[in-house]
Figure (spheres, rainbow, N blue to C red):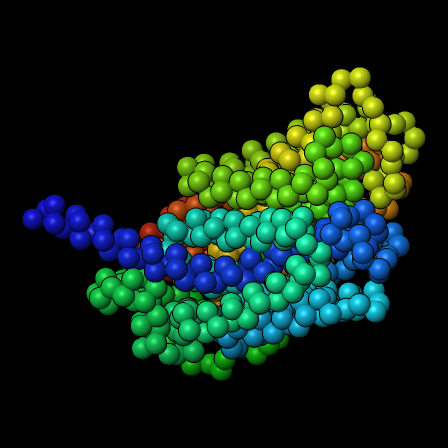
Length: 532
């Protein structure tokens, strides 16, 4: 009898996991499209500056180095507007509808890029639509993932999404070795249409959103579906927890403190924006913005649009087109490593280790650049004749450094902040806080990519690597002091930690709260907010 019960429990666990895995897989089709968009500047800029392969030799449009720097970076700043808008769109219409609507600008952007033949302006217009779509996608994707996943699966599914995004980058790079960049855009125009159809027919709305709209019966069905169509009794406790969290998110702080049912009017937009000033939102917002700052300014992200030229400048022993493709494979491996390791190491340890590895990689390539590159001011965007080294094996040093640099950036500096992004904000301000923090990321990436060529022109190629080394050291010190450990903590535990008035920004240990602790922390949060 006991053996039968164990087998039954195993079947239920598999059904719960598979249902969530299936839903996340459908959602991740958008991340695949996002990966393709992320790779486009890397394959379009070389084609328009005559650095590309034989498939783009017939390209008749050309751009200057100034236009190249804008093309490599302006997509990011447009992502900013999309992200800011997504926070306000996602909350009223829901995560599912937002994911469907975002397919429209994706399709328009790819079609314009395929058809543009007369001017460079049309290329910028097509990239504009893709950028806005990518920004609009951020909040619904991450909110949906955080709200449908069980605590034990959240990190795994975040890593899975990063793998899909990295795979999208890899596919775009690989297609570029077989065809022109325009044909790549033609093929990719089908992806958002397929995604919209799949989301419409296969995904349920999240239980938390349905509860926020008082659609309790639909929320029960959605939760049962997301847990493998198990009987309601199997999810009753989880549903009660979601109801309690939902009621708290819809209540004003006066009613929460007095433990009363809130009958006040729903918060206005200005009141929702005021949530950003409360410490339970402000503290995690500071943490996420700091990690998002370190992501591009530790180097590899700022270099990404110009990576093909950088491999050429370092005299890569492998063809630059192939080197960029191999680098995307390292990105995928980095994401897989994060997925496998984060349960054992936790997010904090893994991030600090990866930051340390990035510091070593940037320091090594800085040493190589100052030691072996030609002594004149060396800039990657210029046409260079290959230089000769007495020891050919030394040519592999920058190649290996760039690969491992990319690997550890993806594994820790990219993967971990996005996991925290989906779980660290309180439900009441999650949509707006996600939009604001994602927008700051796009601002930082834009600044990093837009200024990279100017920094090279001023500091030289190894000089820029030295700058990235200094920032990595600074980032390691800051992350050590502020990065919390959220692994195996529920969304409610995380929210209560940041609502606790006794904890500061450098208190990075999140306790698993007991039920009786939760009402005590609510009052502490209210007293804390009265001081703001």
